[in-house]
Length: 87
Image (cartoon, rainbow, N blue to C red; front, side, top):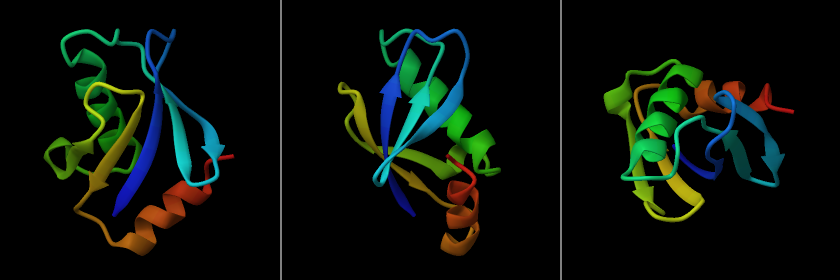
């Protein structure tokens, strides 16, 4: 499944804060320096979607706030159920 994510780096904690249309808004505590926020985002999303870290891929947006993430390892229906819990 491919999802669009808008990242808010340098937050006090990692959290999914909502959705704007189809874009998932995620706060990450790591700074946007040397890929630290990207790595923490992938780790956090793996935990959020209950998949292994190696099943989360950053496909687009390495240097921007809007990213395209691919989540593997679970069915699309299961991932949609997790997304439905986001306000």
